[in-house]
View (cartoon, rainbow, N blue to C red):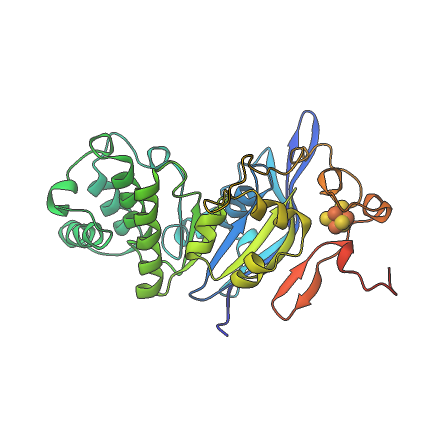
Length: 327
Ligand code: SF4
């Protein structure tokens, strides 16, 4: 088994607002191994994006703050590094791509220029060499006529092409970890499949580990090795992809899987988990999924369960797994 590349331990990221403290990430432990593709799954508001921004050191401070825990990456705690040091790591050792490339690409610079600048920021190479590297990266991510696209502005490219440019930019310094936050959500299904194929290929060719943040279980089943399911700021289930998708244990994960449309079934109405994710301002006592759970018991309202081992690489946070004699 590959050694861990990133280890998040007891991470708590809170926001301090006029209406009180908001614990968006509340005691999260996540590990990603070298070369692994890890899927972080959950509905909007479950804390997955705040967790990834915490890793990148991009939490707006104030109002946000990492109040506790550590983010170990290559023997250093990212949560305690200076902004200068984080700038050296961002884009170079850890890169990130977002759902909407237009929020990351600067509309007044050509696509190529933005990659050239990223490369030159982290590597001591001349403009000519950086441009040649940029064209090579654009070619690698499947952009046709990269010699022409390098001089085009983001608005001259389609959504799929812009996302490829973002991936080329993210991969241009050969990072060890790529964090992808809903990278295919804004794309239509055929382009989505091409981008996922491209990410799989880059992972295979360069050994870059990928943390894939998504609400889409289709994306997870396509590309990931392991899955972490988050709910209301907590990890509720984690394990090997096959084990989680074939044998989900937590009622929330079961609900997410049941909500995926099944083309072979004659079912007329799609299943959806009743209710919504609770506001981090008003979290229920005990298990945070209790108000939506069909298996809820009295104990669930009183005490939050810890993650319990289902097997060697599968854990779930639910009182239903408590051995009867202990319960
Ligand atoms: Fe449902 Fe209780 Fe398990 Fe929470 S602990 S998921 S409420 S059964």
